[in-house]
Image (cartoon, rainbow, N blue to C red; front, side):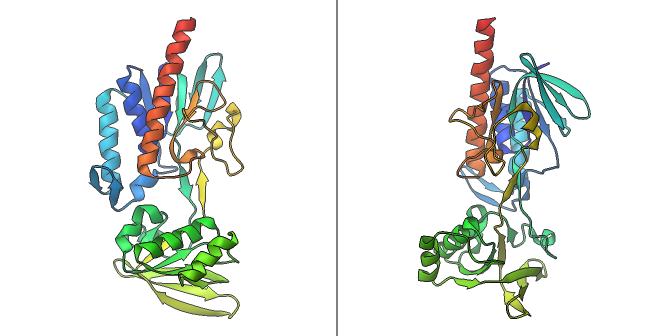
Length: 303
């Protein structure tokens, strides 16, 4: 029996683990490679206060800190969580019990599924303009997507000083004001375009695009490719618990990271928060841990 079980080994989960352990709670955190923490895919981090380096190194430091604080670690995927009275039963390869649960399962950025994409992750392929845009100042970049995320990324990268080409499979699905901004800034929009291949030697150098209206292929020289076709939150795990999610599958939380189910809290990219960054995930994790601590202490007072 644990006081708190944290599901997820990314920045939100590890921060929650650190804080829970420091509150004196018997804490376990579960990490898995499905989905892998998005932080581990970041080749270089420059916007986390007080740290510059690779994402995996930052993740390792956080894990070491959680273990040092007294949290226990399991490399195991939890497949199911049920509630039995005032406790939760977590089922993976083994079975565990906890008095409170913090969901920090993150999510996956949707992949384009094109040749060369995985080979160049961290070498020119990125799924986060806010995270990696600074490395491409003054360079040519391609943004691939049709929605608000893609247009926002294109505008953001342009404002950083990048020469941006926006590739869209379909008409841009954004309000007129954003379309006007794209036109005003002179960002090249290539519509009816399918990204076919990402190529280069050690880093991204070019992409192959199929123009459907012209029925021809075109090669674009570029230093970076930003895939902006959405994110898929990893939240199916909590469906049976009755935890509320929004239409996109993100967990609904209040300002204290509480869900609608007592004893269940959530933090990080799996939540319906406005900004998905390492620093905000850590903040979510700290708040979720504090809320879990208060919840457990209130239970003890009632008993």
